[in-house]
Amino acid sequence: MGKKIKILILGAAAVVVAAGAVIVFRLLFCFEKGPDIAIAGREITKEEYIQCMNGQKYHTAIRLQQEYGVDSSNGSFWLKEIDGKVFYKELADDTVEELRYIHAVYEIAVECGNVEDARYESLISRMEEENERRRETIESGGVIYGLAEYTPELYMNYEMSSLKDMYCADETNEGMDLTNEEIQEYYDSKEWVVGHEAEMADLDSVKTAVEAELRDKKYEEMVEKRAAELEVTGDMERMYRFVRNRLKE
Image 1 (cartoon, rainbow, N blue to C red):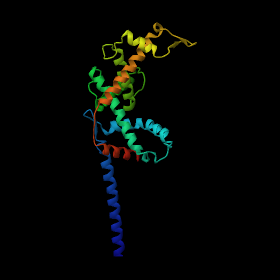
Image 2: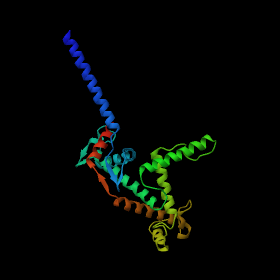
Image 3: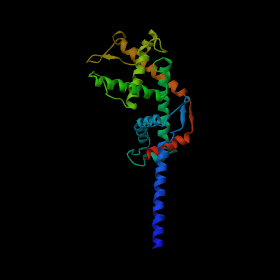
Image 4: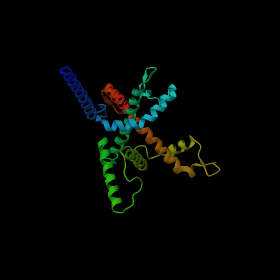
C-alpha cells in the first residue's frame, strides 16, 4: 500500500511539475521581448514585427512557391530548406525589408511635418485617437465615412496612403516640382490613350495624369532609396528563432 501511495504522490508531483513548466513556458513566451532588432535605432516591438510578418506571409509564400514549386499549404512549408534557403528565414528577411520601407515612409513624413515621429507606438496612439473620435461621432448621431474602427494594420495602410498623397500634393517637397522636360520625357516613355476608342492622347489632354503618375513614381523611388539606407541592427539569429516559434503556433 505504501508503495502505491508513493507512486501516486510521485506521479502527482510529476504532473504538477510538468504543468508548472508549461505555465512558465507560456508566461515566458507571452513576455518574450520580440525579435530583438532595430531599424535606424528604433526598436522593433513584437507587435510591430508580427503585424508586418502576417502581412508579408502571403507574398513570401507565393514567391517561394513559384521559385521552387512547393505547395505553400503544406504544414511544414516554412521549415523547408532548398538550395540553402530556409523558408522561415526568407520570411523573416522579407519582413525586415518591408519594415525598412515602412520606416522610410514615416521618416520622410516626419521631415515634412506630417507626423511627429516614426515609431510604431506613435502610430498606435494616433489610431486610438481616431477610433475614439469615430466612436464619439457615432454615439452623438453623427456620420462617419469608412470604418467604424480601425485595426493597426488597416490604420497603417490608410495613413501611409494619406502621407503619400500629402507628399505628392505639395510641390515644395523634394522631387515634386516637375520641370517641363521631365513631364515631356515621362509622357514620351509610354503610350497614353483616352476615350472608349482608346485613341492616342496628346500631352495637353493627359498632362494632369502624367504629372500625377510621375510624382507617384518619384515618391516610390525616394522611399525605396531611403529604405535601402536604413541600418538594421540586432540579433538576427534571435529574430529567426522568433519567427520560427510564431509559425509553429
